[in-house]
Length: 289
Image (cartoon, rainbow, N blue to C red; front, side):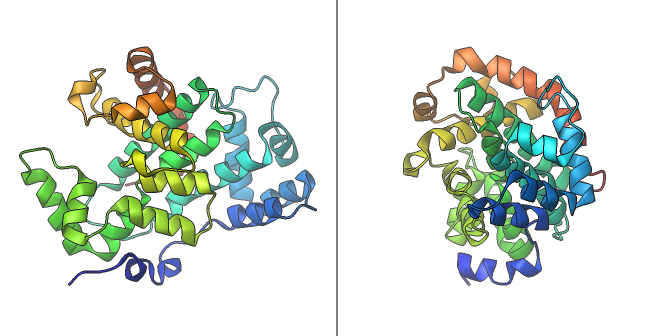
């Protein structure tokens, strides 16, 4: 029996919910009469997020010279939209980690997601994109649809995994999902992002990171997440040779305005060195297992 994405997401709010602090901040950002003080007060209502935010603000993730010791200072230095991205990034893994799943290692899933996030942020900075934190969030969430599929359709997800494992021509997971389900995790993740009314750039990066030619609104950002996804694979298996992992669509390098020879070794090496500290900052000890 074939399922639809709408059926898959029906009742999804009973499984996973957006972090309250992110919802509050987003509502304030949409209100032209709100101030940075209003956003700081919303942050302070969530002590756990406040502590996490200050930890990130005072880490090498930002590298500020002065100590950031209040939510107010964090908002003024980091910026409101970046704070919203941080709120989403630091809390979403905790929410999704509660999804029952016996098909894949959650530790491996979030390791890949975090490597992709780090790579996307670093590539965005190399490209001169100001809101690089949005690319971090996009990288972190790019495969989020997989967790919904694993939870809601475990039998079909198993069939897709077996197709990948038994493929002689290196079938990608999203292609196996399309054959088995009629849709893939990128489409599911994008539908979830729309349901949550996430910013359009996040919706596009989640939706099109495997098929960058379909991205119309934010093609450069989508291309960066596509490249970051491959560089994350390299970091995971500790290689600096692109031939050891899935292929990068050549159009992605053109859209990004980058050359593989200039960035691959640098980005992979740097995200490997940054991974442990960043994992401690963004993931609570009980997030992955």
